[in-house]
Image (cartoon, rainbow, N blue to C red):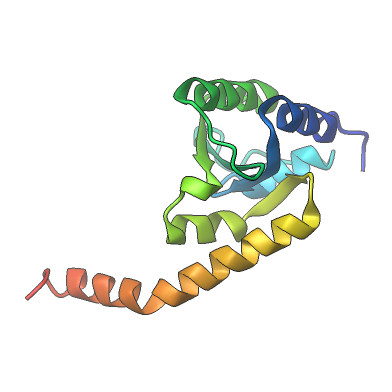
Length: 144
């Protein structure tokens, strides 16, 4: 593994915006993790946006301006055209599940991060039946 500038840059971003966790998910997650770890990589989907999520510290909310600034900072850091940024605490349950199934790039508090992931898993599990029913109804042509 080569010395990578990404861990310290992510820590700086986390400090600037009072973030506890930073995730990457979606089609470019593997490439991004390799980049952060200083490994060689071939961009799998160079024209795709980069899906990232952040979790603020307890009680932290973000203004629209801060969300735009964070997305721009991540675009600059990873040299991509577009970062699709999600605030984990604002995500609907199944998107939150996809996020935590992605890759954790930074965590200021691993114990709290693990608790948050368990909460996301429980919430999605509690709603899984209803989501399956909703999808079944959509596939059958809507509600009756």
